[in-house]
Image (cartoon, rainbow, N blue to C red; front, side, top):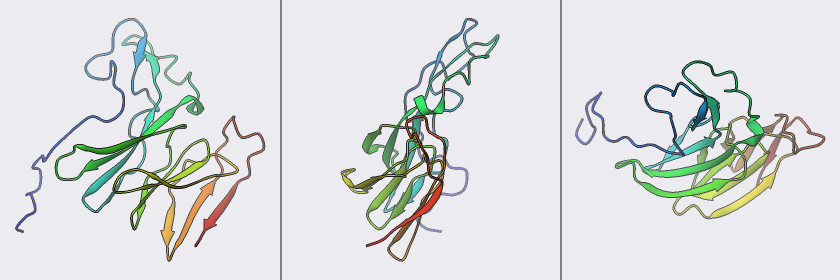
Length: 177
């Protein structure tokens, strides 16, 4: 097909997030590794309008080539996050935004908005074009699921236990116009 690369042709590659001791063998002595076992690109990305939207978990761990007893010692609640908008043709960053909590749920695109939930229960809609915040809300529990969108309705689940939410409420929430 004209204009489509044949299978197995690499168009581009690039790293997202923070990286330290994550390529090659681990050091013999415990060292900070970024991303850690629960860090990096953990969930599905979204693609629309020639852009790829990538939620990245920033959570390091202490590991070594000998032992990694502490690889899970850090709570997922300690993680932060970033969402990247990448040009689908080149992989170059169009914009990126910091998140106050780890995005263990996936990015979803609807019209001109990129919706990203966080483990801390915050849901943020960014403008796909430039990353400005269009809307945000706080769920009554943490999130580690993917938002769904249809017929002008955003549906998202809350139910993950997060230490900053004292009395979490497990629920599915629908938002509309």
